[in-house]
Image (cartoon, rainbow, N blue to C red; front, side, top):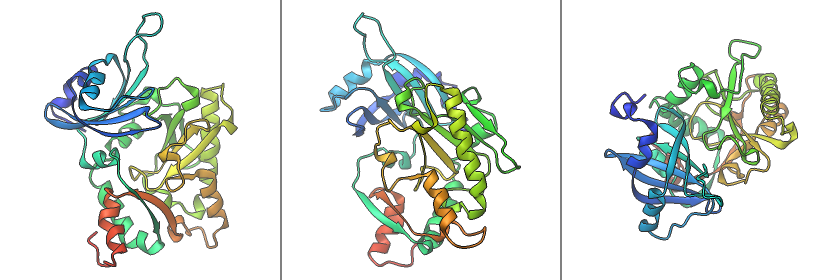
Length: 326
């Protein structure tokens, strides 16, 4: 947790204090921009989403920022904050919350890389590469404290009012909860995006899933579908898509629940999103005992050239460098 002066600032005040340095990326058909800037000298990221943005110059970007009004904080957790705001008036001259903002502050170099434009590369992660390079990398990342916001939710310190479903499952390691993803505006059903966090901490990614987990995964899937349509009765179960990311942004197993109508951007693309049903099916069909896992198969996915996984592992391996520093 951030224990210094930034923790004392009123969340709404942070938006006006944000000083833009540059545009990092524009995506989702121009409806989302990621801006790099500072608040009180510390780096931060401001991710804004609406209809297509004008981005032709820094002057235009600063004019956009100056026009943001009626900032309403929806929640905050560790370095992450999310808002609804207005960027003008509607046809009747009334200001409306037409802008969804996410603020990451203070942000890390890893955050900046994630939200920057970069060339993508497809890689194949064999069981040997996973065991020798990727698993040690995951372990190092988990030790950096970047899971604080996850543990804040699971341990009841933050965002408890947003929890849609909390299920203890059938055993001490089966529990999980579901809440809105910070990228959803919490009202537009066609872009619904929820997040399920498991309580157990021995599953860092889909690589840790084993054949013995199949009954738990089936139960998890069914309860997430039921919990979503119970909370949002305008939706039916076959209007929902469940997937996990690999590589994920953070190494604590979680499942994304989205409306199938949600625009399938890069985060849902082949090489990033793995359907939960397909993972269960693959575990069912691979041979072996209950300890046989997704760590025993090869996985292909894409990485940005600025990713530490590319620069520190896959690019050296491509050049034939075998002895990498983990």
